[in-house]
Length: 235
Image (cartoon, rainbow, N blue to C red; front, side, top):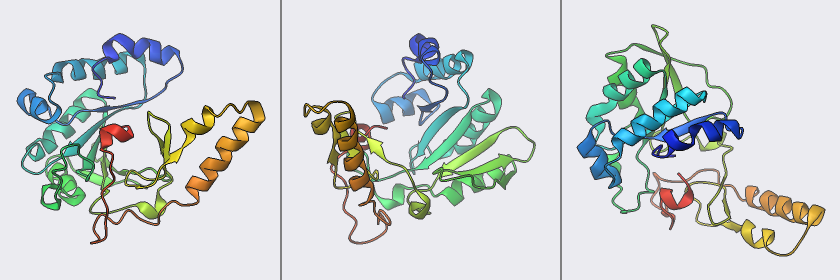
């Protein structure tokens, strides 16, 4: 979520059974935030983070996409924010999923650069990787939390990825960069009921997962950018 409605909804979401939340925030500077999101909502996002904490969500994660020449001077600021506010900051390398189609590799701030910048101020130790989570995690040596980096571009983790997505319009995707989609909504609206419906959905999901790529090929000449942007996929 972008967090702007959490002050109104956090308690209800927690009562409904939601346990954890990821909040997107790409800048702590009001002008940069406006430039990147086209919304002057930084204060509402910060209030949303606090609302999530008060409601008892755990963990509360803040996702930050780093872009060269835009917000890469805020790396340590975000790390400090996470440490001081007891939230887990997850830096994300800029991926070719932007709505403006202006992605280029020279705008990517590499994971190694992010970690080096933080380590120079707040010493870090690499944590043992748990499961198939996409972020590489680092612990602060003084014990004040951790920080993670999702290095989709410079250090792809496709071989360990078990993530899939369902878009808001009911399309099943096996990768953020998938160019094929599987229409679950059509099955759900087909008129099938009960076990027959469950079996049809399960069969389509199994068929889709069977096509999951070995890798997304961002760094290869044959890479094909997906037609949906990140906001259209769901994220």
